[in-house]
Length: 273
Image (cartoon, rainbow, N blue to C red; front, top):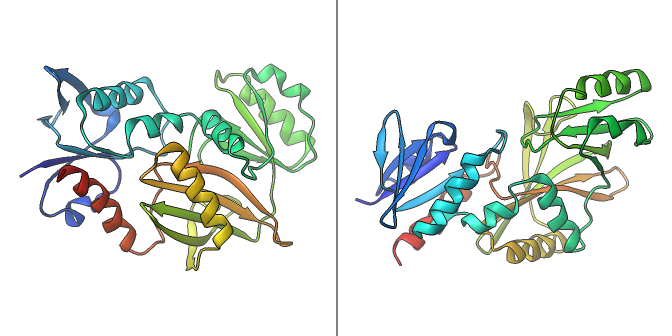
């Protein structure tokens, strides 16, 4: 029986992949070994030699162990979804945004400073959103509504060594996620309990994808060679759409189980070659 390593991620993959020995490990607790061209991954529960890898690392701060692991996966030639080279393109939020802009897609306007002391040079109308570093999943960001809060945030950010992104606040009517897996595309709107749509989400609704956005997503998918990719979009009341980011390790919450099986098939096909 072949072994599939699920790195971080959801607990349901054993049920989705019953024909395989599915082992889940957290990237934070693993050690990675390349020996005679073979890949081994260990933690306090033991060492395995994976035949395939489902990379589901998200909502944690990117670290050197992640890039080391991706390099070793590539060197060993172990099938991985997404491929290591694809995941490394989107590893940092700035490189992800640069990729979107290079393709001419309508990404949300943003400013960036690498030192918090330069925040005093950023002038934006309130409200706006400040994002610290490279977190995903709604972490590391705050809504700034007035001058007093902005001063407090600047004082707080003085202690960070991460870069800081500043974006206009979009008073959206819909937060939309498009996901492509292979040649299939799904679309969903979602609503959060507060202003962050992906935190304490209370409502999901799948809908028929729009052709123009499908074409944009497929262009992005082809450009970075992704088996799975999502774009997150904010829609204003006037219908204007703003791409916030792409995600090459998107969560599947709110979508039908069809996506889980489709993603599993991507890896099992690679294992059968």
